[in-house]
Every structure is written in C-alpha cells, then in structure tokens.
Amino acid sequence: MHPYHHPLFVQFMVYFNDNQDYFECHEVLEEYWKSIPNSDKNHPLTSYILLATGMYHWRRGNLAGATRTLRKAEKKLPAFPTHYVEEIDFQQLLANVRYTVKRVEKGLPFESFPFLITSPNLQVAVELAQQSMTLLPFGSEAVIHKHMLRDRSDIQRMRDEKKKGRH
Image (cartoon, rainbow, N blue to C red; front, side):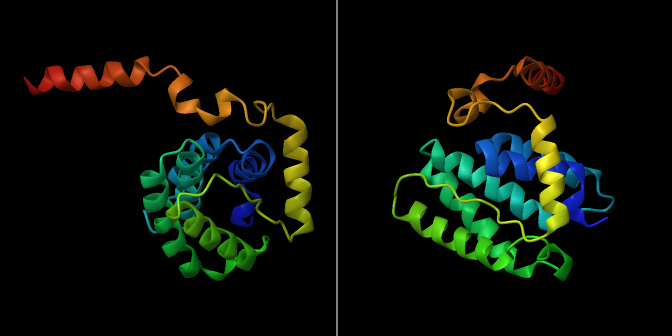
C-alpha cells in the first residue's frame, strides 16, 4: 500500500482540505508516524506534522511558532523519497509552503491552501473518508482553538505525578 493510502493519512487529507482542522491533522499523522517501525524525526510524515502545526499556530496568531515550525517543514520537504512525491501535486505543495513561509515572516493574515490530489485512487479514498467522518464546523472556535478546549486532566495528572517522584 502506498503510504498516502493509509487510513490515517487519508484522514489527514480530509482534515487539511475540508475543515482545516490542523490540530487533528497533527494528531492523526503523529499516530500514523508512531505506528511505523523504526521511524524517526527524519521520516517524511514529520514534515506534514510540522506543516499542520505551523498552520495551526499561524491561524491563531502565533507568528513566532508558525515561522519556526513552517521553516522546519519547508526544509524537510525537498528531501522526500520518490514515493512520497507521488499521488499529490508535490511541486505545488512545495510552492504553497514556500509562499506560506514568506507570508508568515511578513506577518500577513492567515491563508490556507489545499493538498492537490493527482491520484484517482487517493481521491476516491479521500471522498469515501469524507462521507464517514464527522468534522467540526469550518472556522469554528472548536477547530481554531482546539488545544485549549480539550480535556487535559490526564496530562496534568501525569505531570503532577512526575513532580512528586522528583522530590
């Protein structure tokens, strides 16, 4: 199976293109990346994780975080192995990321772009996923500020337990 046909990557495409839920883009790709044996921070999926994170920061007005993260994604993209430049318009993606980095560096307002799919099979997979996924409303507070709205009590509990163990 081509890596872009993995169900989690297909979900990433839906989140990125449909409701621009960049937080969920990060979540599903991180899950996919961690499921790959021997994957490291140089794996191509980390570039897309960085891209989604950068877009999330930019839309929320965190220009420093967006610039730093998008530059990392921009730097990693040209080194993709051949099979990671198939199935999508990779040259257009590179151009969009470079354009986005320049806009963020200039402090310009948020502007999204889509992943352009060139593979009919991937397009079908994305369309099928769109029908089965429940997406938050485009542009909603729940999409834009998702990290602030989620229940983090389990994370805080783990941090507190670690602190207790240090003393």
